[in-house]
Length: 91
Image (cartoon, rainbow, N blue to C red; front, side, top):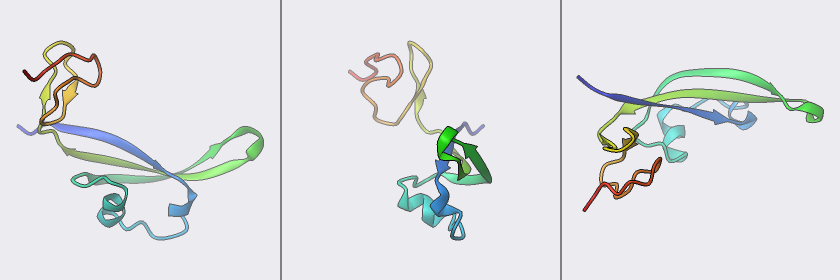
């Protein structure tokens, strides 16, 4: 069974002014390998500065790493240390 990892990418108003290019736009943002699941436009109220339009992109990709033996966090392939607890995972 495939294991998935998920990420929410918040983009500012510039993306609302043009049509979202999907995978091409994600690649430009360094998100190669991620699949776009949903795009949700939002307006965020920022106190005195007013409302700021944003887009939240929900992404997923197949998880190909392994869990940290100490804390269970997801480790990227080839990781030497866990980014959550600092445990050394490669000898």
